Image: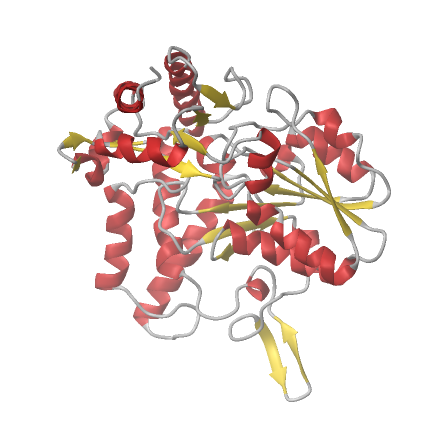
Length: 407
């Protein structure tokens, strides 16, 4: 295995027992566990320097503001963005909604198209459907192929002058598939369309350079990359952000307010109305420090090696079907699977009794479940603290479930 060192020692929750069994946490695609470095960074703010940011001329406020803006700079460097291109949001979902409503309501109309794929998380489908309803635009979907990937040609062949927005996941939360974003972005730009990436799974697990990626916007969440809940990131090219209108109004996002109207603060602050989640952003900054020290190339290599091992071990089980690519080429560490004689929810319940934590259900991807013709899947997903022993525990627990169901 790719050696990440003894990172598990940094995660106190992994010492827990579940039903008297060793904890095998395999639901990191939903939300990752937190190292002590992140917990300590947030605790330090609350204990020693808590005050609202950007609003006080006193010491505590200045210290909190410095830490908050330092976190923004850390995220900027982490994805190789330029200064003032990072907006802190509530989540990936809120970031995608921000772009959808700002671009959609101010730029789409009858006959325009929004292109996405059938494998998307609801957060990259529902906002576009809502915007389409308001504007008269149409949402169209690229399909997956027989290998459960979105082929570049399947997307680029659908891009014409009617397509104004292309919004695609950089890594599927169900299939693990990783589309060729840079190639799709080039095709989108050639047609005059805006390219948006749902990077909720991509940024935590793989090196991301937004300049090389070629997109216009990219959204991701803190809680999937060792940070706290309640804060996400929207990256946008500076020229695009300058053109966008904010969708929330209030304090901090204004330059001036009169009874006749308002003017906006400079980017990125014009998109951060109200008190921001500054303690959470500082926690995200600590998570970025942690991942940067490990190296994202090593993180991605660890995911791929563990995913390859899991695919091999799952292949040993009769009548178990993996939904997703059968190899680790352009693939992330989310492995969904189903068994014809055991419902995913029943399977997850039995696995929990064995100390193995997996997600079961539609994974906020109902259109994809219908495309795969399954009601639900079980999903095992990995991160830096996952080890082969977790996969072995999963396989053993599945055999327990097969015995209970007599299959």
